[in-house]
Amino acid sequence: MAKAYTPGLKVTPRIAFRSRRLLPIAGKVLVAKGDRVTGDQIVAETFMEGDVTPFNVASKLACTPAEVPTLLSKKEGERVEQDEVIGQSKGIFGFFKSECRAPVAGTLETVSATTGQVLIRGEPIPVRVKAYIDGVVGEVIENEGCVVEADSALVQGIFGIGGETAGPLAMACKDPAEELHEDLITAEHKGRIVVGGARVTVAALRRAKEVGAAAVVSGGIDDSDLKELLGYDLGVAITGSEQIGLTVVITEGFGDIAMATRTFELLAGKRGSNASVNGATQIRAGVMRPEIVVPLADGDGVVASKASEGVLEIGSLVRIIRDPHFGVIGEVAALPAEPAVLGSGSKSRVLEVKLADGEQVTVPRANVELIEG
Image (tube, rainbow, N blue to C red; front, side):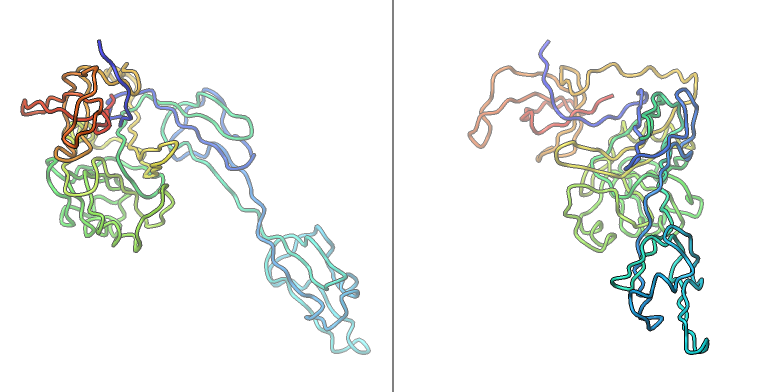
């Protein structure tokens, strides 16, 4: 049977999901292989050095830089508290003494007899990594982190903003073609992953922020609405660090596009289940998709997909990603071996896609995206 390879999105009711949870610098791993963890559990932590605050003691005490070490009541390496007196001048005949206080809490790191300055190192900054999903620690990476594993339902999106979050899935729309407006967002959506249908409006996203929703998932979004939400044009290749108080995942693309029926039904079937969501998207080398992960309960009868990643063959489900059939999902009906002449006059490898209404169209292979699962 003819086969080809193409990039794809995973939309599957069951997959062996593995999440690498790594610290940015060496630290301490708090779990062991085989441990069962929850998504909000801290699995590794480290401490980054605090900020340095320079403080000119010579000017405060009206002395020469060389006198500073002798006038300090603290030595290098000792802890100081904010507003604590750390030095005092000799005064005149024991009177009219000046004193200096520490501007911040921390450690007295350096005392200079040349400049009269001291450097105070601030409190260490904790860096903690959570498990992200409910699952089992399958691997421990010494001093770095671990890999958390869980059989999960997985939906990858086209585009997202905002970082990792979690909460129960809640359906705001009854149909994948229904737009997600602000009147569909209620106070009951606080802390939840709100699933819409087609385009989500900027008013709905603001309403979701207002009620405290954890994330919004929908089929499409207008570029102008995204700009209005963020306050700027998103021109970077990597997202996920946006601090807007809400994570957003778009499953189909920009514009008024209905969520794929398969995706909508999968999420609807998991309503009420706890899900982990990450809006981080990378569109260049090392592609990273936004995702909705729903760990499955033990004993769930859904059989995991065995399809080979990226393999395009007869019967594969694909999404057309160029006009005139942009966003349409169909099934691969044929994979001609020879290149075909396109309307532009150029030659390209093509495939035939059978659409839901039975129509069969021929499109370049570069114009489709595999829906894996």
